[in-house]
Amino acid sequence: MDQIKNLSLLSAMCENVNSAITVTNPATGHVLGYVPSHSRETIENVIAKAEIAQRSWAKTTAKQRADILMSWYQLLMDNQEDLARIMTLEQGKPLAESRGEVAYGASFVQWFAEEAKRAYGETIPTPSSDRRIMTITQPVGVAAAITPWNFPIAMITRKAAPAIAAGCSFIAKPAAQTPLSAYAVTELARQAGLPEGLLNIVTSDDAVMVGELFCSSDKINKISFTGSTNVGRILMRQSAESVKRVSMELGGNAPFIVFDDADIDLAVKGAIASKFRNAGQTCVCANRFYVHDAVYDKFVEKFAAEVATLTVGNGIDNGVNVGPLIDANAKNKVQRLVEEAVAQGATISIGGEDLDGQFFTPTVLTHVQHSMSIVQEEIFGPIAPVIRFHDDASLIEMANDTIYGLASYFYSKDINRIFAVAEALDYGMVGVNEGVISTEVAPFGGVKQSGIGREGARQGLDEYLNTKYICLGGM
Ligand code: SIN
Image (tube, rainbow, N blue to C red; front, side):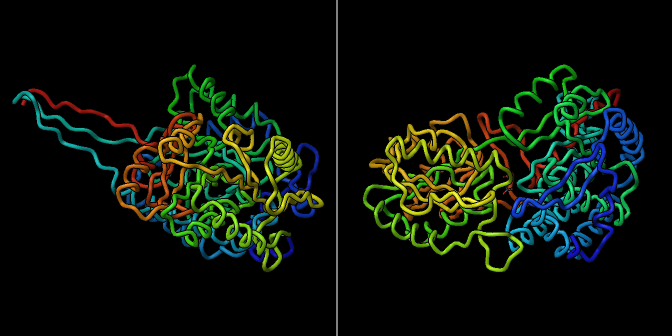
């Protein structure tokens, strides 16, 4: 932490280790510091204050909200290096990726500063001449979010920025592993002039209590969650009682398909980026690779050769491409999946080594069958299982054979096939000849059990707005 220049970013850290969350560096196991573990009563107070703050915020103009968001964006970028270092220290991802995430996270703030001014209503042609019909949009009220450890900044700004832009107040509970980034970006929002009570972080070692409190509170009008499908189901069930609006960005099992007409070098480049970003701990990571029989050997050879160049280590060190897994549970899961795959007949083409601490070598598995657990489960680690396929029809069937529908990727040069496959894939997002597709301007989200709602893009603002229909009669 002594590398951080702007100490105001660490102002939420506390000395009192009783009733606190310990934040550790996953690369070294060292304690970085402590943040408060808030009680139920404290969080209820935060919700009550957020409700009061929202009422005044809703009365501001879109331009006033946009100006503050723009200042926040600027401060995020001005503090990019410090924020990136905090992120790498608590989350583990390589510093270059953390810098990228700060810019990605800030891009949502900039985007929604612009979109705030476009929360348009409509006038609608009237069916009777004595009436005029119109709609206006209004903020949903208090929005709450539960955010994950894999993108400690971007998953907060992607939710908070549209909420603030729409005129909502916002409360986030970040993952217990990565609270420092959450507090740091919130402090910058305060410095940007965001009034008190509008952007709140609560931290607790009792995630179940916070989830239940958010979902049951009748002061909170909207829940946004990024995390596992299992937890998403629980939050949706809990939100049903108060009929809350929900946005859910849940698990994925992304297929990465290489057709026989693909540019293999491009596919290898996309595969490396998609699979090994954040050590494979990304909801949109390529989870399973399907490669056509005619190019299978060539792809595997080039892919394994590229994987061999990746450097595993502490993300703060120069030249590291793959950091640690977030905790021991994550590493145990990866180990189990590799062991099961090998026992079921898969071959380790490269990697497969269990390194000290929470590190695992980037791994390519061949002789993989679609039915294996490593293909059916979300891996969330640096393992690439590669399956051979023979024809497009059975390929599409396998690619869609999952409860998940978040991201998918394929490589082909044939324009007819490109449209046919993009339309046939049952996913919210399709990357064609591209392995990393996330951007603030495009709608991010899934179908099936990968979630509900969209983040980023113009659709991201709608998630925090209600549409009100106004009928003007007696004309
Ligand atoms: C996620 O893994 O949930 C987010 C990834 C992204 O925004 O690219």
